[in-house]
Image (cartoon, rainbow, N blue to C red):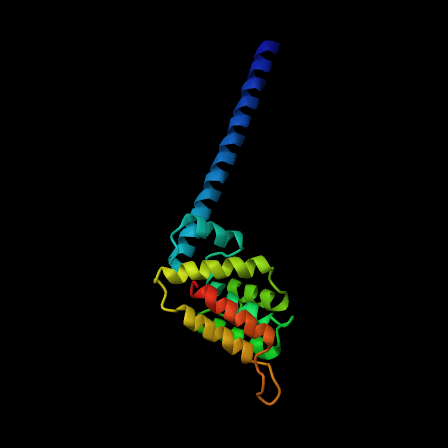
Length: 187
C-alpha cells in the first residue's frame, strides 16, 4: 500500500467518522424533539390546553406531565406563603388537597409540592400559573371551576390564622384572595 493509499484511506475513515457523529447528533436531536412533543401532548391532555404557546409556557415554568396536576394548587400555595411562610396547618391542608387530586406520596408531583412548601416559588411562577389556570378553566375540559379554586385558597388562608377563631384571615391573605378571585374568574 502506498503512502497515497494510506492517506486516502485515512481521509475516508475520518470522513465516515464525521458523518456518523453528525448522524448520531441529528438522531439525538430528533429524539429530544419527539420527547418534548410527547410531554407537551400529555400536559395538554391533562390540562385541556391545546395552544402550543401555553404548553411551552407550562414547560418553561418547570411543569412536566408528572407534575402538571399541581397547577390548580399554585394559587393555594401562593396564599400559604402570603404571610412569609407556610404553617404546619397550611402544609397539612395543601397535602390533603394534593392527595384528593390524585397526587400520591413520593411521586414527582409530591416532591415538587414539598419543594414549594419548603421554599417559596418565584413571583413569576405564581403570576404565570394563575394565567395558565384561567386558560385551563376557560376550556371547560376540567370539572373544577374558579370558585372551587378560590374556596381552596380561602381554606388555606383560614387554616392557621387568628386567635380563638377571630380574624382567621390576615389582611395580606384577604387582599391576595380578592386578587386571585378576580384573576381566576377573568375579571
